[in-house]
Amino acid sequence: MEIAHPYLLFLGDVPDALAAKTAIGIVDWRRDWCIGQVRLEGCVADTGLPDMAIEDGAKKGAKTMVVGAVNAGGRLPDHWVDSIVSALNAGMDVASGLHVRLGSIAAIAAAAKASGRSLYDVRHNTEVFPTGKGTKRPGKRILTVGTDCSVGKKYTALAMDRAMSARGYESSFCATGQTGVLISGRGVALDAVVADFISGAAEWLSPATHDNHWQVVEGQGSLFHPSFAGVTMGLLHGSQPDAFIVCHEPTRTTMRGVSTPLPSIQQVIDFTVQAGRLTNPDIRCIGIAVNTMALNEDEAWTFLAKVGEDHGLPATDPVRFGIDVIVDKVAAEFGGP
Image (tube, rainbow, N blue to C red; front, top):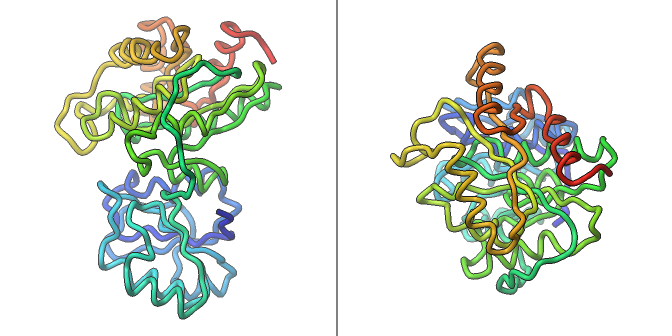
């Protein structure tokens, strides 16, 4: 896919910022590609971009309207259809990270055909993946894993890739979700891959390379989440990471969208090592990334210091305080660039 930018970001009427994480993620890492945002009445999320009507976005030069909101199951609400049709009629392509294919909705398909515009279903791909083989391959890999979904795995992986490249490492980011694909221009939305082929898709995404190349793989879900653990396990086995970073949000008590209690960081470390040894016996944890957005600065530093001391690992908020302490751990464990 080659999706034209600038983007106009559609947020719909989502109830919180996490539900607009696709749009917010694009703004955080590709703000220069974005013109504005479209929000329906009742929308709580805000990317910080100017609010504008779809027609105004088109006049300002937007090439693609990106449906930047998500929900459980990846459905497209009926009352969003008119906005997508309006974008097509205004001369824009439309890209979506939802599970539903845009062209499967009659009104959208008809508008795309009439306007000659393109529909991009970022979550879907035409690649045929093999089943995973588990054979150890050259190269080095870092995977971000979580105590829950939506805790910062993508941001941590992007920050790690950026910091390692700045430090002189040969590094590349491997996107495994729709937002990551929109940010990087390449990747696989693993939650749309048929279950038997998830580990094979992860192997395809992080192929054999030379030993000095680090592939930083975006994590998905959580091994402890009853809804999404299947994708997480397949990604762990297929990416066969040499190292992993645990991502955590400290104010949650239950996992997002369900009543399951949040696991401890140590439980995540232990289970990830146990399961990951199937395809990489040398897997190890190299750090803890904490989303401290809900804490003030003093609380954040206090929490990070305690977590780091409790687990004997570097702990940081990659967005707020940078991630150099975990890059230092890579240098100590695996050597410099």
